[in-house]
Amino acid sequence: MPGRVNRVKEPISRVKCVVDSCAYWDSGDRCKAESIEIQPPDALDTETTDCATFVPREES
Picture 1 (cartoon, rainbow, N blue to C red):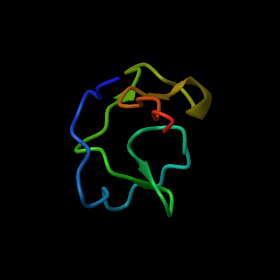
Picture 2 (picture 1 turned 120 degrees about the vertical axis):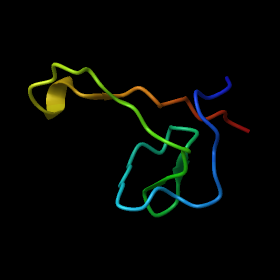
Picture 3 (picture 1 turned 60 degrees about the vertical axis):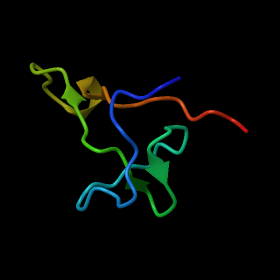
């Protein structure tokens, strides 16, 4: 499945991601998405937020 954004060589600084099933995840809990989108605009707590950039990692 293609991603919404490009996977880049260097991780986004100051972003920690522990979702190792995401195609943008990299060892050390780093995100290698070109940019990230967090939704929804009306979220009130961490339970209602979502990383819209997430793409499932393809198993090889």
